[in-house]
Image (tube, rainbow, N blue to C red; front, side, top):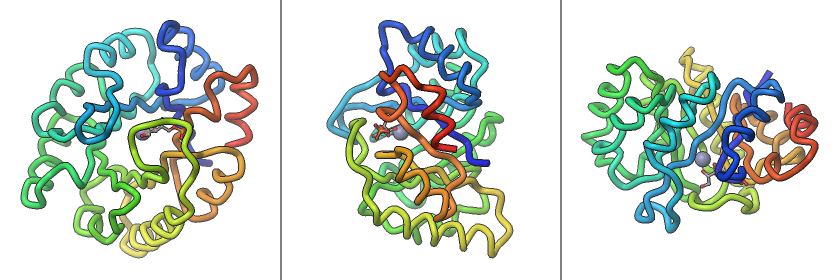
Length: 215
Ligand code: DX5
Ligand code: ZN
């Protein structure tokens, strides 16, 4: 069964505690936290102090997606603030610094993920798959919720699924952006393990029903 990770980017930030209870009440074990710096992406969202408050109010697995230009400077703050998984972007780190960053994050006893934007080829992830707990395929340009799903992401998921399975790696495949009951089916068929969904879930009275539909 796939993991559904509701993205709080589309939640009511004035009632974050209630929104997290809604996530828990729907049976989800993960929550997806989008961190944006206004530089790597043209939007600013939330930072480590908010993550710390989230950590205090929920036992959910905190899946932290860093859409920031300098993950090497900030990853530690997010771990200290309670992240269970830190996912940084391939595009944000110089190639020779990727492996050291993976090791530093793992050394803090949290899970590590790496993400690719829609224009990045999945091949770039291949050398790292054996060390990663998760790869995140963006199915929209990162920065905003509520965008339309980009179908070219499905081929990337299929390619990564084959690479991971053929080598017996443990890495999960997460897909993020434009997930609804239709695109979820395609993503699962392509081999995704984790579905991030924001605007499809939050702001609707039938949150738990929608989570079921995604499954
Ligand atoms: C976009 C974020 C996503 C976003 C998804 O940059 O990474 O996590 O919240 O939102 P929806 O599900 O509305 O596309
Ligand atoms: Zn995200």
